[in-house]
Image (cartoon, rainbow, N blue to C red; front, top):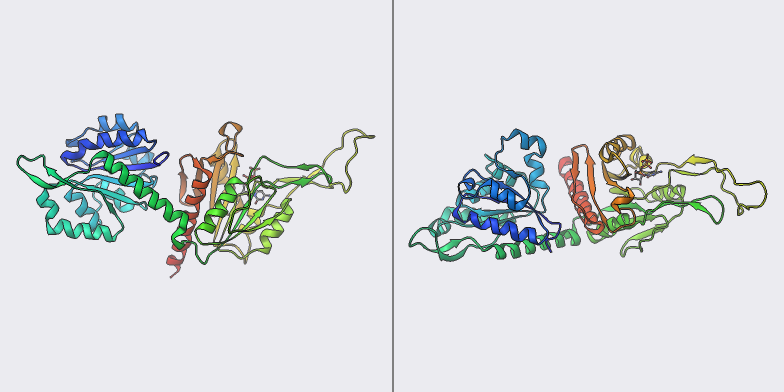
Amino acid sequence: MLAEQRILLIIGGGIAAYKCLDLIRRLKERGATVRTILTTAAQQFVTPLSVGALSGERVFGDLFDLTAEHDIGHIRLSREADLVVVAPATADLLAKMACGLADDLASTALLATDKPVLVVPAMNPRMWAHPATRRNLATLAADGIAVVGPNAGAMAERGEFGEGRMAEPLEIVDAIAARLSAARLAVVRGAGSLAGRRLLVTSGPTHEPIDPVRYIANRSSGKQGHAVAAAAAAAGAEVVLVSGPAEAPDPAGVQVIHVDSARQMLAAVEAHLPVDAAVFAAAVADWRVADASEQKIKKAGAGAPTLTLVENPDILATVSHHSTLRPRLVVGFAAETETVIAHAQAKRARKGCDWIVANDVSPATGIMGGDSNTVHIVSAAGVEHWPPASKTEVAARLVARIADALAQQEKDRS
Ligand code: CTP
């Protein structure tokens, strides 16, 4: 459930901070990656050294730490997570979140994140019951922030008893798993996020004939492109999938146009424009045989034939540069075997698309034909490194990102 999930744990300044050490251990045991931010007050209760030793990751603490900003930056830190957890969420942190204050790394990351947030309050029962805290919690609930705990029991202060004890690590683990699966479901169902949109996806290899029985091909299975088409359909889009001869089965709920060659793929793509967004995941053959033989080339006689290759049309570049029918969002892929990011950036500029999903397809990665993928999203905003994930998961994230981008474009225009 938590394998490959990335948690950003913001540790607040309260006596219950010690429970976060056990929480980190439990999350790691379940395969999650845990990055941490310690507020200044938290560092009075747990040390960056112990947190770092357990998480196996660098611990972040100061907004004005120039090395940390240079390496990762607070915006990326808050967005390269599947879930942000605040524990212990002190009365002070909850108040800051409710007001949108951003005066240290923890509060800035919370204001900058676009990911679901779970808070784990812990405080004195009177502070918990105070009308100000109640108001702040109501605001946070209205903002969609989830809460686990607090529990009732004896407090650290002598003689104090009541509601305010931080939830136990295993309860928090359960709440994290529940929040993540709710977020995943929302992506899969799309919550109507692409309803009313038209998407076009290319997928699979192309086959370029040499003669009626032989062809030039590549190792693409079509799994990633087909998964994108399926995820977009699940999110409510009307999807046209133009597929070369792929190994992956036709996804349900998608209009599939089967083609063989690059030129057929281009013709099918152009015939299905306009669309709101297009994703070019196909591994299109760069070259075709100039004069493919009408008849099977025979071995007998003049020795081995010489094949003259000519370049195929670039479908992605053609659509990206279309004067009237360019989709609002054009996403290309880059299959590379070396200097992945630099090549992808050059490809994005050359082909004129908005985003490039870059991956390393060297045989050792097992990506081509395999079920998982490690991708880097190259856009005008920079490069975002996504963790290794199944092709289905990569597709769900990409589709969610496309839905957000289309919605944002409309907001910007209005
Ligand atoms: N692409 C395309 N038409 C082509 C070649 C590629 O639409 N004739 C698209 C692919 O679908 C992908 C992107 O362009 O979205 C990059 O494909 P890739 O194979 O990585 O790059 P190439 O253009 O083939 O460049 P190179 O061979 O130099 O890496």
